Each structure stands twice: as structure tokens, then as C-alpha cells.
Amino acid sequence: MKFSVPTNWQEDLLAVFESPAIFEVYGKLAEDFVGGGRCAYSLSVISRVDAAKYLQRVHKGNCEFNYLLNASCLAGREFTRGGRREIFRLLDWLVKIGVDSVTVSLPYLAEIITKSYPGLKIKVSVMAHVDSLEKAKFWESLGVRSITLLHTKVNRDFELLKKIRKHLKCELQLMANNHCLYNCPLEEYHELFSSHASQTRNSDGNFIFDYCYLTCRYMKLSDPALLISSPWIRPEDVHLYEGLGIDSIKIVDRRLASMDLIRIIQAYLNGKYDGNLIDLFPNLGGLSLVNLPNILLKIKYSLRPFQINILNIPKLRKLLGKMQVFIDNRELDGFLDFFLTHDCKHVSCDECGYCQGIAGKVVKIDKNYQDRLCIEYKDFLNNFLTRK
Image 1 (tube, helix red, strand yellow):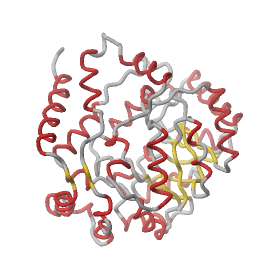
Image 2: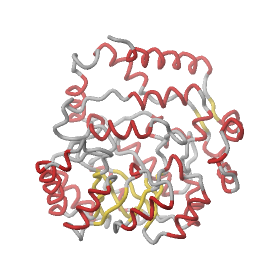
Image 3: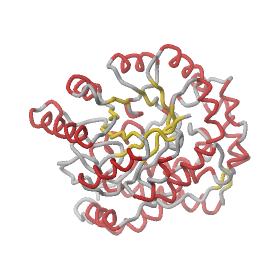
Image 4: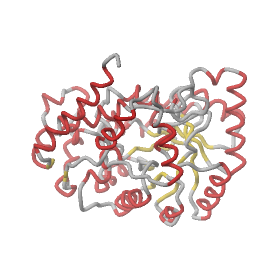
């Protein structure tokens, strides 16, 4: 299996990229005209000059570099003269510095690239929501090289994976460790405001209160079965997808500190992890990317008294910390076999009960901690439901 891995633009990751199993490194500037799937304030800052130098060093390790242009919405700016100029300027720069491929969510961007930059490989983001054979065939007809299928619906639907693989020639990729809810009801909303919060010239200066992220954590803490039903792929189970003809696995998250990224990447390269499964999930393990530019950026985005009550920031920091939950990864050996013969699409989780039963066995969480933090999450979220 090949792996696509993120960069936080730190030099201590470069040695990891030399693994022969890693074929691609992906990343982007904290802000650009198109934007992407992560809010600017959570990302490490790098200049265009330094990004170009970093890309050259990635190439020396025999890895390709994939630049993300995967915003879900450009607010219609892409159809203005000025917007198109900005898009072409960005693409010109990417070609100039030697980017090998770009990942998009919008068909319009794919068509622009196909027409004007035939040497630039196009890959389809998970944020394009490809969760059916029909959608996959549409994107393939645009000439894309690879499609990352929608993990929240597809990762454990083995019959659909077989069908898509049978009828498509382009490469297929799955996201392994983004701990989203199964059939997430917050997904589209989250992607849209994250896209706008990573775009230059955003009227709100890319400040964002991540309602979806906090709500997701609150839901999982309230109902630990959601920790199990989330469609993650363990390092030990990658071989099942390789057998289906999946070409590559994407690992997240480019917001993380290098030490955390290295631990996660090594677990997937080794095909096993002896420890807490939560450690492999950035959105549960806490985000630990800390460097001086990023701290200054956080101050810039956070200290906006007319948009957020700054007295809430210490509470928010506490709620975004590592979730004190333990799931022994090795206790989940054989867990995925159930989904090889069961169809989640046509039965409710309440009727099935499989993930609920597994959660009762493997999820370890202190009841006092759980009850207290649930109250804190609810109180914090309620602050944004009032007129104040």
C-alpha cells in the first residue's frame, strides 16, 4: 500500500518522507485565494519562498508533492474576472515551483487545470463527497488521476468499494484516521466555513469559532459508541483495502506537531500500533502544533473583541485538549470483519448495536470526567445560542 502524508512545513519531517511506502506529501499555504479544508489559524505559517525550497527537499527524497486547492466554496469569486486572474496566478506559481499534483473539490477548477495546465495531475478531495459509482465516473470523465472517496460513508461499505474499483480506471484513495462521525450531519457545514477561513481577502479575517468541531467532540463524549462507529481504518486493517484494489491511504493531519505526525505515520508504515487508538486521531488527541509564527497568528485571529468574548478562550483551550479516553487498539483485532458481511446503509445503529457493544467492551473513560466535561461542552456551546 502507498501512503499520502501531510506536512506541517517542519524540517524534522523530511527524513520520514524518505520511506519507500510514502509516495506523496501534501500541504498548502495557511492562506491562498482558493483555500482548503483547514482553518488558517490552526496551520503553521510559511512564506512562498520557503515553501518552494521545502518542496525541492521533498523531491530529493523521491516523493511527489500535492498542493491542496480543495475548498468547497469560493463564494462565486471564481467566476469574476479578478477571481479567475487570482486562480491562474496561483496555478502559475504552483507549476513554477514544481508541484506535481493538485487536489480539488470543485469540477470547475478541474476543468481549468485540464485545459490550461495539462502537465499538472488532478486529484479529487474527500471534500468533493464522492460516495457513489456515478459521482466517481463523473470525476474520472474529467481526466483526474486519483479520487479520495468520502470516508464518512464509504470506508466500511465494502460492496460499494468493490463496485467502484471494478468500474473505474483511475486510482482510488481512502482517508484512514480522520475521526469524523459516520454519515456526519455536520460535514458539509464544517467544510464550507473551513474553506472560507483559509482564503485570502476573507471579510472576517479568517477568524472562526469551530462549532462543528466542538459539537462533534461533545457528541462522542456523550455517546462513546460514536467513537467506534466512526469509519477509521486501523493500521492493522489496511491490508483488507489493499486486497480490494485501493491504491493508497491518506493520513492526516497537517495541523499537528512533528512528533505526533511521525508517531501516526510510523504506525501505518509498520502496519500495527500498540497503544491508545485515540492517539492516531488528531481531532481527539488534541492539536499540538506550536511555533512562534503560529502563536502570533493565533493571537491575531483570537483577540477580536467584537467577534468573540476573549474571556471564553481559556475555556475553549481546555475543551480542545486531548480527550481522556482509552481504547486499546489491539482489542479491536478482528473488529472490521463484521462489516465485510453487513450493510450499514440499510439498518440503523440502534437496530444493529454492534458498535455499541464493542464500545462497552473497549472504551475506557472515567464517568466523573465524562459527566463533568459534557456539562462544560454544553454550557460553552449554549453561550453561542443567546442574543449576546
